[in-house]
Image (cartoon, rainbow, N blue to C red):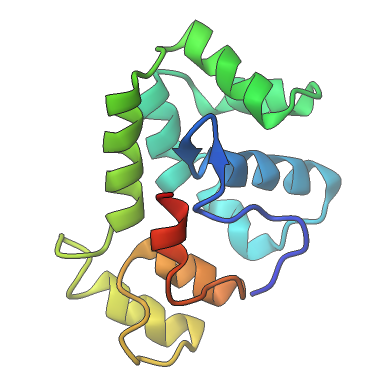
Length: 150
């Protein structure tokens, strides 16, 4: 579903994928613009993984974002209160997040079920969770993942 103002999975904040998306969902939810279908996963799923990796609680990130912090400022706050990531740790995070669903425990059940649920053509484009999200929200193009790593 197309959601005006929601960030993409590959959008980077200080080199990290996904953080900008989480911040945009926080802002959209607070403004009443986030569709209800997204509510259950706020602070869960990739939001939760991101916060746990940073060593910070989702509610604390949410408070920073809602206090007016830009994405970069909120992430810098996370680095100072949780843990500062090295370039290698950001690489590991980006690699895990962008490949979730490909050759792992989600491959055989979750990905095919989500393709059906989202009404996406089962044409081999949707391999990862990021693919599903980007296709569903109308941002996906064939070399998106490759461009994101540049």
